[in-house]
Length: 80
Image (cartoon, rainbow, N blue to C red):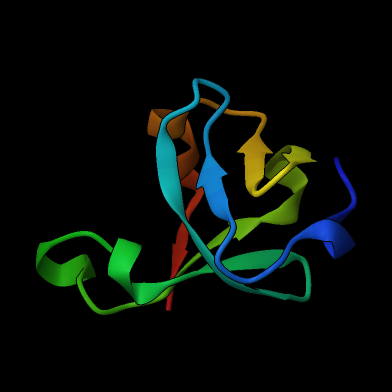
């Protein structure tokens, strides 16, 4: 896992495959809180989603790269 203290608001979260997963709202405890605009459609719309910091592979520039591909990473998201 990379150093979560390097994560800043509005950084892009991408999967290991380089595909957009979300945008950082903030880090809460051991989770990255994603902005509501990346919450998806239907019943997911308008809710914050969270990704565990344990999925972080590295923080590079303005991007947080996850250790899982985007299609797998979204299955680990928590909704609140």
